[in-house]
Length: 263
Image (cartoon, rainbow, N blue to C red):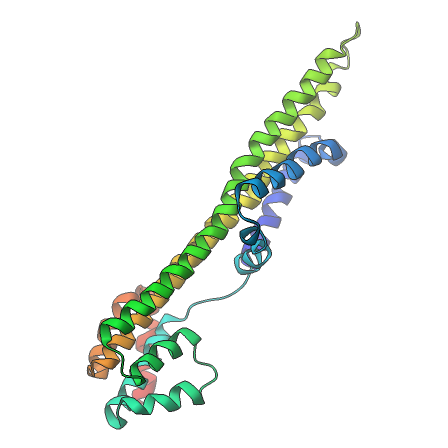
């Protein structure tokens, strides 16, 4: 939601500054420019990516504008608690954690289920890593679509501007007093292309890549935690090792959680 608000504010800022300089909002409206830039960019993107990838763009936008937040301190505390129960009751006690807790992430359940099934630690780790890599590849594919559209739209804008100038110059008459008014609409294409790229497409691509990095970090923590639990490592040691994934603020949050549990 914060990304959506930021985009709206950036558009308002650009248009507001234009109006403050004496411009009129009607001067930024052109159906022809919109067709050249937006339809042209969409067609170029459709030609560049498989249809199955294109179909996922609404979902990618929902993710980019969503409020999902990875709570790593809480996740570490959860694994520390699970490891304590496992050391007390054995690895088979994880079965109740898998089937009895609907709030547990499916990725965590998959890892714990493989541990219960008795797979080798290396097999568990490699399977989870492969799933993480495939997830990241899908995320990057979505980000590439928006990145590509952000790279194409300014070019389409320039093409539209050139076409407009060709039309204007080809129809110049003897009266050049209104030349500025005739040429100005041609540059709306460039404005549309640059505005779409820099205020919408490129920021979404960057946000998706940042979200992917956060999720990969979370998955790496889960892989490390599941491996340590399978090896029967002391819960306190697990907590200390997993703290390496936290930044300063997250570390303070985790310490508060840990102190609250001790009390």
